[in-house]
Length: 167
Image 1 (cartoon, rainbow, N blue to C red):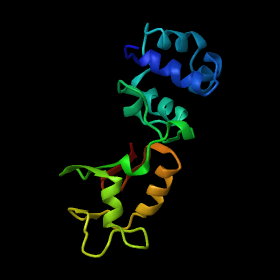
Image 2 (image 1 turned 120 degrees about the vertical axis):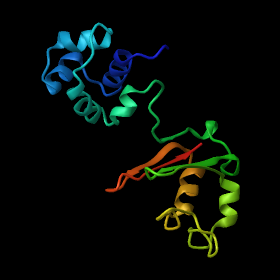
Image 3 (image 1 turned 180 degrees about the vertical axis):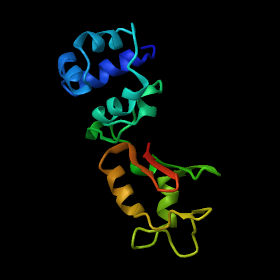
Image 4 (image 1 turned 180 degrees about the horizontal axis):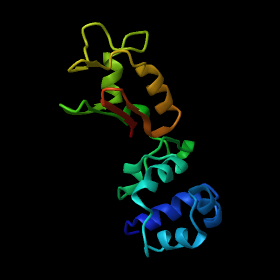
């Protein structure tokens, strides 16, 4: 499916079991306006994008970006990978540096202490931000139970963002 904002709005609305009328009411527009959005005949007003994204439980970036919205999901047992074959992806952006970590879970297990945190001597620090306090054992447990996708999306007061995925 080729990306369009209208198609994404329709997909998000339908996935939440909403009618065009219900969406229109929540957004303070007519059902015809929603229909025009979904058929790519017009677009929501720029000031409506954040409230629309919030209504759907996504960010404005996710609403506007092509591709599927990545959220964590639990796969059925027959579709799960062996946890040791999975990857932990961590993205940190502190407005000065952008760091992308791709860590095989098997390697991560080797770096962990008994408490599920990184062993002494292993320091995962980016500028003034440290990821050493993360309970990686809980992430590995979630992965072993079939959880994949985006686990965490965090933004601090200073604008630093951290996203954590299991793939």
